[in-house]
Image (cartoon, rainbow, N blue to C red; front, side, top):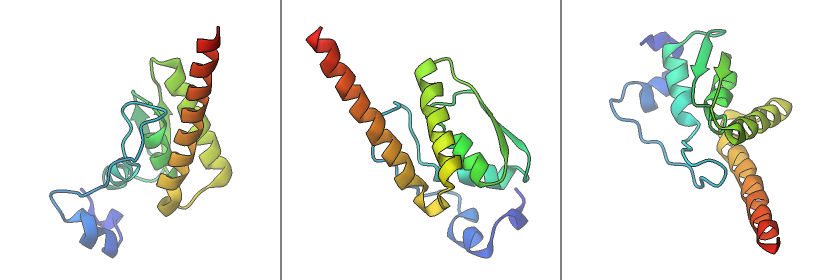
Length: 130
């Protein structure tokens, strides 16, 4: 780990600690194995350089890709589930279009989750009517 990759505040608040306290995501509405963006953001920042490539073999909802973009890294993401790729691509596209500040990313992701939850409920209602 290269301490120089962190600001002084980051080093004091989490970089020097053996255990990180990161609140969980509030909802897994759009993807079952969701995690807070702060987790991959910290790991990416600690163990890669700007313009490095981050590989995510289980793209899920795109959290790691957004963290990579936020930290100035490139990414390669893949997933065997088509729905996961669609969710991730939508999240990444929306993020790039809006370029939300890192502090706002959790809120941004919750907005996408709520949209997919609503779509899922509507599809469930439509399928029951058939």
